[in-house]
Image (cartoon, rainbow, N blue to C red):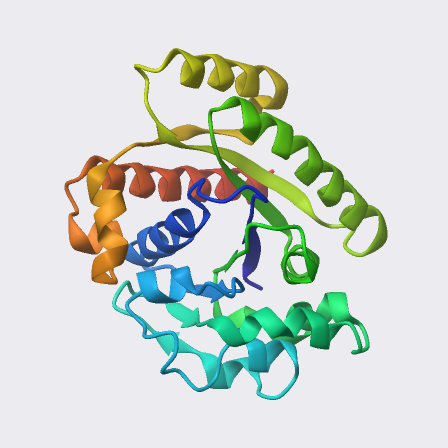
Length: 258
């Protein structure tokens, strides 16, 4: 069965979608079968994968409400992975989900039939701890938390960790923190270095060794609808995400061997 990883942080602009797209593409480059689910009404992972979010008739909205099976929503994109797209229709789903049975488990049930087709399933979450994010956390075995090394990021991290703990206690006992990923990192910035040291002290092995740097190519790639490894393979951003994919594979191999 594929490993389902929710990529989340309630703070916006920390690199969740960038990580979702580029990690999916990097693992696809290693011939892994990868699915990316966009569960954010903004649809940035959809656009960043080269898909017109408003033109696609079947999205995460239809899947969560049970109007269409998830197989009907799948799109294969240039980055080499499959995508379940999202658009603004999803913004109304939270209100509609409240009245449905097992509203927190809709994504988990939807994935049951196709999870075995993939080695990795990534869920790009909205920047909020809402019912959409809860669906992702209930469906996942692991949580990846991209974050900038700044003061406010640490404050938001506490709330997210509390939410993960509550989900584990009530809805998904198997949920684990996959790792914390430092993004938009500038080694010349003293605060970045200080916060990075604090994260290393508090989270140890849960902190990825790979660091995603500030990189203009990473910022440009979404406007072209491409992962950065397709846009500019030699850029520092592309090399960082390929390194992250390698680190993730080594971790998973090690845990299976153990």
